[in-house]
Image 1 (cartoon, one colour):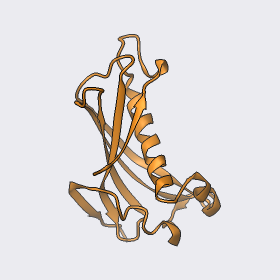
Image 2 (cartoon, rainbow, N blue to C red):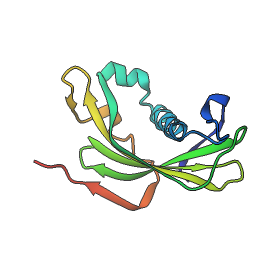
Image 3 (spheres, rainbow, N blue to C red):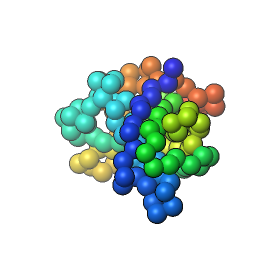
Image 4 (spheres, helix red, strand yellow):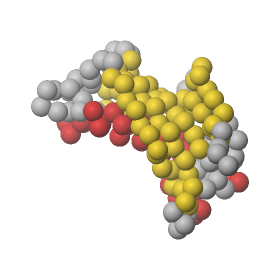
Amino acid sequence: MSFQVTFATKWSDFDPNRHMRHTAYNEYAAEVRVRYFSEQNFSIQEFTKHNIGPILFTEETSFRKEIHLGENISVNMKLSGLSANNERWKITHEVFNEAGKLSAIIKVYGAWIDLTKRKLTTPPEEANNLFLNTVKTDDFEIIKLKK
């Protein structure tokens, strides 16, 4: 089972067309990632302690079905790629409407950044198992780093 969070949507998530605005989908996906990291004992406080943070290189959203005002949604995450040193990762989120219909797919490609050096870094040893229990997508890949 993938990591999944159910949210009660809020008024500010919607646009004048009475459906969820496109950026709200991505905000919920980001919240799921942060909650997942916290569940794996690598919370925002751990980021601060180690002076690192997650960054995104790309974020691609594909919309399938509308989400309407007042609907609850569920958002999951699955690992679709990881480098051998855990520096870079790809995560796929699926967003489901209240009826359980797939409403959007969000794919992100990210990494860890050292917040002082402003350069990519490998996560500390405490985060080595961060993705160990993450469900993988069918198209999971090992991310090869350029030398």
